[in-house]
Image (tube, rainbow, N blue to C red):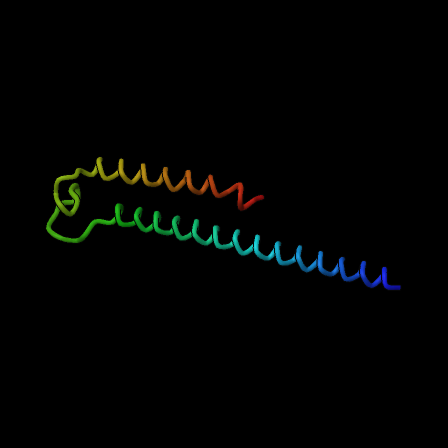
Length: 97
């Protein structure tokens, strides 16, 4: 009878330890994902700031400082979009796995 209780106690301790380790791992994973989402959100906001032009006296082919052409702005925007696309692709295996 004593061996039975000792085995049950050992099994309970093992189960609780496994649950605690699992909870710690899940917490770490969730925090890492939240940080990745925050970084991605910042990149998307940066994209928006590149894409938006401040209203003022500049012509449609110029940015706020008047020295950058529309083609240069489009090229910067395309590079930023490509960067965000790569980040999303890097996240996709973690989302599906």
